Image 1 (cartoon, one colour):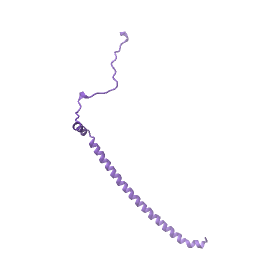
Image 2 (cartoon, helix red, strand yellow):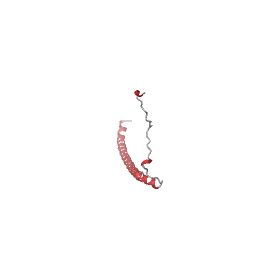
Image 3 (cartoon, helix red, strand yellow):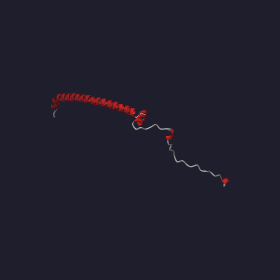
Image 4 (cartoon, one colour):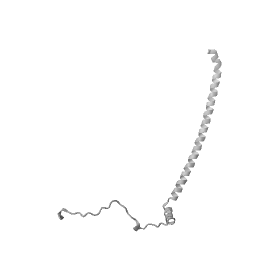
Length: 106
């Protein structure tokens, strides 16, 4: 390639470089916009799931509150409230009292 041929092609290469740069800029802007929409969609979905979780936690707390469980046990299953003499205390091994004999008693 001679220097004369290269000079003739210089304007073509510069225009090609400018056009490719503009295409790259447009492509990057489109990708940025697309990613922004993806992030927006995921953010909305996250908020929706968080709200559903909060609602379910509140429903669980309402269902398992002690007063409701006690009421259901008495109404549905006809259970009665416990009385003091019905409570059985389970503790560790109970040792029988050992009669300690002193040496001088022998």
